Length: 142
Figure (tube, helix red, strand yellow):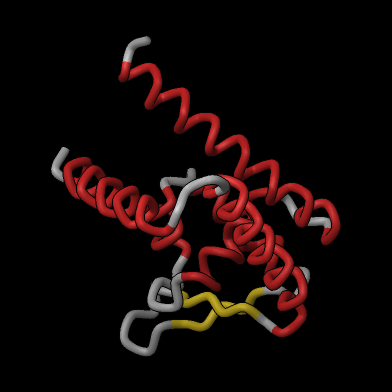
């Protein structure tokens, strides 16, 4: 089979499986997939806490992130804090009301990783991590 097609199909399959794992948690807590992804991004990446960070690093549409942030804020799951030096920037913080949903979503991420790593020994995972790191670096050059 064509290697490029294999990579693209594998990427799409990974994304579908990941979304399937997260959708269970999203449904339990009445969250959209984007809302769950916004919460997870903020939880997993403490140094990146603006909507622009989410858009840039996750390649999500700006309008979808904006809508999710607005909805999460209205539910009391997020708060926006104006930057002290630049009033145009708002830092997002997860509020205590969201912690159960965030912990469940984080568990879904762990379950997903266990699922895709099934049958791969730790030494092989180190090689996979290295190869993906090199590929990621190469892709940033485009």
